[in-house]
Length: 303
Image 1 (cartoon, rainbow, N blue to C red):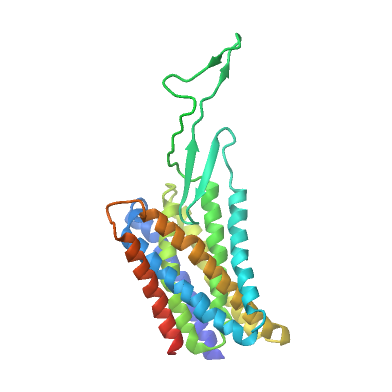
Image 2: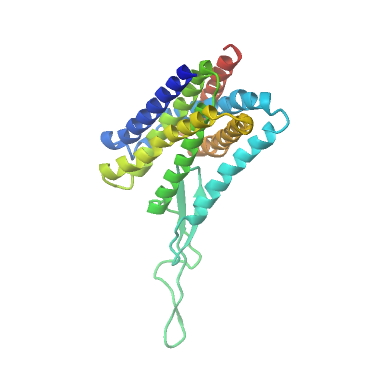
Protein backbone atom coordinates (compact mmCIF):
# COMPACT_ATOMS: atom_id res chain seq x y z
CA UNK A 1 0.00 0.00 0.00
CA UNK A 2 2.77 2.42 0.98
CA UNK A 3 4.72 1.51 -2.14
CA UNK A 4 1.65 2.23 -4.24
CA UNK A 5 1.16 5.62 -2.56
CA UNK A 6 4.82 6.44 -3.17
CA UNK A 7 4.51 5.62 -6.87
CA UNK A 8 1.36 7.73 -7.13
CA UNK A 9 3.05 10.65 -5.36
CA UNK A 10 5.98 10.40 -7.77
CA UNK A 11 3.51 10.27 -10.66
CA UNK A 12 1.79 13.43 -9.38
CA UNK A 13 5.08 15.32 -9.17
CA UNK A 14 6.26 14.03 -12.55
CA UNK A 15 3.05 14.91 -14.39
CA UNK A 16 2.73 18.35 -12.82
CA UNK A 17 6.36 19.33 -13.32
CA UNK A 18 6.44 17.93 -16.86
CA UNK A 19 3.20 19.67 -17.82
CA UNK A 20 4.38 23.01 -16.47
CA UNK A 21 7.76 22.83 -18.21
CA UNK A 22 6.37 21.76 -21.59
CA UNK A 23 3.54 24.31 -21.29
CA UNK A 24 5.91 27.23 -20.84
CA UNK A 25 8.39 25.96 -23.43
CA UNK A 26 6.66 27.51 -26.51
CA UNK A 27 6.82 30.96 -24.94
CA UNK A 28 10.48 30.52 -23.99
CA UNK A 29 11.44 29.33 -27.47
CA UNK A 30 9.13 31.66 -29.39
CA UNK A 31 7.33 28.74 -31.04
CA UNK A 32 3.78 29.87 -30.29
CA UNK A 33 3.01 30.86 -33.90
CA UNK A 34 4.58 27.95 -35.77
CA UNK A 35 3.77 24.92 -33.65
CA UNK A 36 0.17 24.76 -34.90
CA UNK A 37 1.39 24.08 -38.42
CA UNK A 38 3.95 21.40 -37.51
CA UNK A 39 3.21 18.01 -39.06
CA UNK A 40 5.57 16.39 -36.58
CA UNK A 41 3.55 17.80 -33.69
CA UNK A 42 0.32 16.67 -35.35
CA UNK A 43 1.67 13.13 -35.72
CA UNK A 44 2.70 13.13 -32.08
CA UNK A 45 -0.81 14.17 -31.08
CA UNK A 46 -2.25 11.37 -33.22
CA UNK A 47 0.07 8.90 -31.50
CA UNK A 48 -1.15 10.24 -28.17
CA UNK A 49 -4.74 9.86 -29.38
CA UNK A 50 -4.14 6.18 -30.11
CA UNK A 51 -2.59 5.79 -26.67
CA UNK A 52 -5.65 7.41 -25.07
CA UNK A 53 -8.08 5.21 -27.01
CA UNK A 54 -6.34 2.01 -25.89
CA UNK A 55 -6.03 3.30 -22.34
CA UNK A 56 -9.73 4.13 -22.28
CA UNK A 57 -11.26 1.03 -23.86
CA UNK A 58 -8.68 -1.75 -23.58
CA UNK A 59 -7.29 -0.91 -20.14
CA UNK A 60 -9.38 1.27 -17.81
CA UNK A 61 -12.85 0.15 -18.96
CA UNK A 62 -11.79 -3.51 -18.81
CA UNK A 63 -10.72 -3.09 -15.17
CA UNK A 64 -14.01 -1.38 -14.30
CA UNK A 65 -15.98 -4.23 -15.88
CA UNK A 66 -14.38 -6.74 -13.51
CA UNK A 67 -16.16 -5.13 -10.53
CA UNK A 68 -19.18 -3.60 -12.26
CA UNK A 69 -19.94 -5.99 -15.13
CA UNK A 70 -23.51 -4.73 -15.49
CA UNK A 71 -23.04 -0.97 -15.10
CA UNK A 72 -19.51 -0.25 -16.30
CA UNK A 73 -20.51 0.41 -19.92
CA UNK A 74 -23.34 2.70 -18.85
CA UNK A 75 -21.08 4.74 -16.55
CA UNK A 76 -18.49 4.79 -19.35
CA UNK A 77 -21.03 6.51 -21.61
CA UNK A 78 -21.88 8.96 -18.82
CA UNK A 79 -18.21 9.91 -18.66
CA UNK A 80 -18.24 10.60 -22.39
CA UNK A 81 -21.38 12.74 -22.10
CA UNK A 82 -20.02 14.55 -19.04
CA UNK A 83 -17.04 15.94 -20.94
CA UNK A 84 -19.29 16.64 -23.93
CA UNK A 85 -21.54 18.71 -21.65
CA UNK A 86 -18.56 20.57 -20.17
CA UNK A 87 -17.34 21.43 -23.66
CA UNK A 88 -20.76 22.74 -24.71
CA UNK A 89 -21.26 24.75 -21.51
CA UNK A 90 -17.91 26.45 -22.00
CA UNK A 91 -18.84 27.38 -25.57
CA UNK A 92 -22.18 28.67 -24.32
CA UNK A 93 -20.45 30.96 -21.81
CA UNK A 94 -18.00 32.39 -24.32
CA UNK A 95 -18.59 36.07 -24.94
CA UNK A 96 -19.35 37.23 -28.46
CA UNK A 97 -19.47 40.62 -30.02
CA UNK A 98 -23.19 41.39 -30.35
CA UNK A 99 -22.63 44.00 -33.06
CA UNK A 100 -21.52 41.47 -35.67
CA UNK A 101 -22.69 38.03 -36.73
CA UNK A 102 -20.09 35.44 -35.86
CA UNK A 103 -20.13 31.76 -36.59
CA UNK A 104 -17.91 29.74 -34.26
CA UNK A 105 -16.49 26.67 -35.95
CA UNK A 106 -15.06 24.35 -33.30
CA UNK A 107 -12.11 22.27 -34.50
CA UNK A 108 -11.44 20.99 -30.98
CA UNK A 109 -10.56 22.57 -27.66
CA UNK A 110 -7.06 23.39 -28.89
CA UNK A 111 -8.04 25.22 -32.10
CA UNK A 112 -11.05 27.53 -32.30
CA UNK A 113 -11.48 29.32 -35.63
CA UNK A 114 -13.97 32.11 -36.09
CA UNK A 115 -15.49 32.78 -39.48
CA UNK A 116 -16.42 36.42 -39.30
CA UNK A 117 -19.25 37.38 -41.61
CA UNK A 118 -19.17 40.91 -42.86
CA UNK A 119 -22.58 42.01 -44.00
CA UNK A 120 -23.53 45.20 -45.82
CA UNK A 121 -24.99 47.61 -43.30
CA UNK A 122 -27.95 49.56 -44.52
CA UNK A 123 -27.79 53.11 -43.26
CA UNK A 124 -30.95 55.19 -43.23
CA UNK A 125 -30.62 58.85 -44.09
CA UNK A 126 -33.21 61.46 -43.43
CA UNK A 127 -34.55 61.12 -46.98
CA UNK A 128 -35.25 57.43 -46.36
CA UNK A 129 -32.75 56.11 -48.90
CA UNK A 130 -30.31 53.33 -48.06
CA UNK A 131 -26.62 53.95 -48.09
CA UNK A 132 -24.41 51.06 -49.26
CA UNK A 133 -20.68 50.68 -48.71
CA UNK A 134 -18.55 51.66 -51.69
CA UNK A 135 -17.13 48.78 -53.72
CA UNK A 136 -18.79 46.09 -51.63
CA UNK A 137 -21.64 43.89 -52.72
CA UNK A 138 -24.49 43.49 -50.29
CA UNK A 139 -24.20 39.72 -50.20
CA UNK A 140 -20.42 39.66 -50.05
CA UNK A 141 -18.99 37.51 -47.29
CA UNK A 142 -15.40 37.42 -46.22
CA UNK A 143 -14.02 34.53 -44.17
CA UNK A 144 -11.09 35.55 -42.03
CA UNK A 145 -9.31 34.19 -39.00
CA UNK A 146 -9.30 36.37 -35.95
CA UNK A 147 -7.70 35.94 -32.59
CA UNK A 148 -9.83 34.01 -30.13
CA UNK A 149 -11.20 36.15 -27.34
CA UNK A 150 -9.67 36.07 -23.87
CA UNK A 151 -12.75 34.23 -22.60
CA UNK A 152 -12.09 31.49 -25.15
CA UNK A 153 -8.64 31.02 -23.66
CA UNK A 154 -10.08 30.86 -20.15
CA UNK A 155 -12.62 28.29 -21.29
CA UNK A 156 -9.85 26.35 -22.93
CA UNK A 157 -7.88 26.34 -19.68
CA UNK A 158 -10.88 25.31 -17.57
CA UNK A 159 -11.82 22.45 -19.88
CA UNK A 160 -8.33 21.00 -19.91
CA UNK A 161 -7.92 21.48 -16.17
CA UNK A 162 -11.08 19.46 -15.54
CA UNK A 163 -9.86 16.81 -17.92
CA UNK A 164 -6.48 16.86 -16.17
CA UNK A 165 -8.15 16.17 -12.81
CA UNK A 166 -10.04 13.23 -14.31
CA UNK A 167 -6.81 11.85 -15.76
CA UNK A 168 -5.26 12.10 -12.31
CA UNK A 169 -8.17 10.15 -10.85
CA UNK A 170 -7.41 7.29 -13.25
CA UNK A 171 -3.98 6.97 -11.64
CA UNK A 172 -5.11 7.73 -8.10
CA UNK A 173 -7.75 5.00 -7.91
CA UNK A 174 -5.60 2.33 -9.58
CA UNK A 175 -5.19 -0.40 -6.90
CA UNK A 176 -2.48 -2.41 -8.69
CA UNK A 177 0.99 -0.79 -8.35
CA UNK A 178 2.35 -2.67 -11.38
CA UNK A 179 -0.23 -0.99 -13.62
CA UNK A 180 0.57 2.50 -12.39
CA UNK A 181 3.62 2.78 -14.62
CA UNK A 182 1.57 1.76 -17.64
CA UNK A 183 -1.04 4.39 -16.85
CA UNK A 184 1.59 7.02 -16.16
CA UNK A 185 3.30 6.39 -19.48
CA UNK A 186 0.01 6.37 -21.38
CA UNK A 187 -1.29 9.60 -19.88
CA UNK A 188 2.10 11.34 -20.06
CA UNK A 189 2.44 10.63 -23.79
CA UNK A 190 -0.74 12.62 -24.35
CA UNK A 191 -0.63 15.18 -21.55
CA UNK A 192 2.84 16.54 -22.25
CA UNK A 193 2.07 17.14 -25.92
CA UNK A 194 -1.25 18.76 -25.01
CA UNK A 195 0.54 20.97 -22.48
CA UNK A 196 2.89 22.15 -25.21
CA UNK A 197 -0.03 22.99 -27.51
CA UNK A 198 -2.03 24.67 -24.75
CA UNK A 199 0.99 26.77 -23.83
CA UNK A 200 1.34 27.80 -27.47
CA UNK A 201 -2.35 28.74 -27.66
CA UNK A 202 -2.14 30.87 -24.52
CA UNK A 203 1.15 32.45 -25.61
CA UNK A 204 -0.38 33.50 -28.93
CA UNK A 205 -2.43 36.10 -27.03
CA UNK A 206 0.77 38.02 -26.43
CA UNK A 207 0.38 37.73 -22.67
CA UNK A 208 3.36 38.06 -20.35
CA UNK A 209 5.40 35.04 -19.31
CA UNK A 210 4.24 35.55 -15.71
CA UNK A 211 0.59 35.41 -16.75
CA UNK A 212 1.24 32.34 -18.91
CA UNK A 213 3.06 30.67 -16.02
CA UNK A 214 0.07 31.19 -13.74
CA UNK A 215 -2.30 29.61 -16.26
CA UNK A 216 -0.04 26.62 -16.85
CA UNK A 217 0.41 26.18 -13.10
CA UNK A 218 -3.37 25.82 -12.70
CA UNK A 219 -3.47 23.27 -15.51
CA UNK A 220 -0.44 21.29 -14.37
CA UNK A 221 -1.71 20.95 -10.79
CA UNK A 222 -4.94 19.35 -12.04
CA UNK A 223 -3.36 15.91 -12.37
CA UNK A 224 -1.85 16.13 -8.89
CA UNK A 225 -5.23 17.07 -7.44
CA UNK A 226 -6.87 14.14 -9.22
CA UNK A 227 -4.21 11.72 -8.00
CA UNK A 228 -4.53 12.94 -4.40
CA UNK A 229 -8.32 12.58 -4.53
CA UNK A 230 -7.91 9.07 -5.92
CA UNK A 231 -5.47 8.12 -3.15
CA UNK A 232 -7.90 9.37 -0.49
CA UNK A 233 -10.78 7.46 -2.03
CA UNK A 234 -8.73 4.28 -2.17
CA UNK A 235 -7.44 4.74 1.39
CA UNK A 236 -10.88 5.23 2.92
CA UNK A 237 -12.33 2.19 1.27
CA UNK A 238 -15.75 1.12 2.52
CA UNK A 239 -18.52 -0.80 0.83
CA UNK A 240 -19.51 2.34 -1.04
CA UNK A 241 -15.98 3.29 -2.08
CA UNK A 242 -15.35 -0.23 -3.31
CA UNK A 243 -17.97 0.61 -5.92
CA UNK A 244 -16.91 4.23 -6.38
CA UNK A 245 -13.42 3.29 -7.62
CA UNK A 246 -14.63 1.38 -10.71
CA UNK A 247 -17.30 4.07 -11.23
CA UNK A 248 -14.59 6.75 -11.32
CA UNK A 249 -12.49 4.55 -13.60
CA UNK A 250 -15.40 4.13 -16.03
CA UNK A 251 -16.17 7.87 -15.95
CA UNK A 252 -12.54 8.70 -16.64
CA UNK A 253 -12.40 6.14 -19.46
CA UNK A 254 -15.44 7.75 -21.09
CA UNK A 255 -13.87 11.20 -20.83
CA UNK A 256 -10.66 9.93 -22.43
CA UNK A 257 -12.70 8.50 -25.29
CA UNK A 258 -14.37 11.88 -25.82
CA UNK A 259 -11.01 13.64 -26.00
CA UNK A 260 -9.82 11.11 -28.57
CA UNK A 261 -12.76 10.87 -30.96
CA UNK A 262 -14.26 14.34 -30.55
CA UNK A 263 -11.17 16.51 -30.22
CA UNK A 264 -7.83 14.99 -31.17
CA UNK A 265 -8.77 13.06 -34.32
CA UNK A 266 -11.25 15.54 -35.90
CA UNK A 267 -8.96 18.49 -35.25
CA UNK A 268 -5.79 16.91 -36.61
CA UNK A 269 -7.50 15.36 -39.64
CA UNK A 270 -9.23 18.61 -40.64
CA UNK A 271 -6.01 20.53 -40.18
CA UNK A 272 -4.19 18.56 -42.88
CA UNK A 273 -6.80 17.03 -45.20
CA UNK A 274 -7.10 20.02 -47.59
CA UNK A 275 -3.42 20.87 -47.97
CA UNK A 276 -1.14 19.71 -50.79
CA UNK A 277 2.29 20.16 -49.21
CA UNK A 278 2.08 16.82 -47.40
CA UNK A 279 -0.29 14.60 -49.43
CA UNK A 280 0.39 11.57 -47.22
CA UNK A 281 -0.23 13.42 -43.97
CA UNK A 282 -3.57 11.69 -43.38
CA UNK A 283 -2.08 8.23 -43.86
CA UNK A 284 0.84 9.11 -41.60
CA UNK A 285 -1.61 10.27 -38.93
CA UNK A 286 -3.48 6.95 -39.13
CA UNK A 287 -0.24 4.97 -38.86
CA UNK A 288 0.89 6.91 -35.78
CA UNK A 289 -2.58 6.63 -34.24
CA UNK A 290 -2.58 2.86 -34.82
CA UNK A 291 0.93 2.60 -33.43
CA UNK A 292 -0.07 4.38 -30.23
CA UNK A 293 -3.09 2.11 -29.86
CA UNK A 294 -1.01 -1.00 -30.51
CA UNK A 295 1.71 -0.11 -28.01
CA UNK A 296 -0.73 0.22 -25.10
CA UNK A 297 -2.75 -2.82 -26.19
CA UNK A 298 0.37 -5.00 -26.26
CA UNK A 299 1.44 -3.72 -22.85
CA UNK A 300 -2.02 -4.44 -21.41
CA UNK A 301 -2.21 -7.95 -22.85
CA UNK A 302 1.31 -9.00 -21.85
CA UNK A 303 1.69 -7.37 -18.42
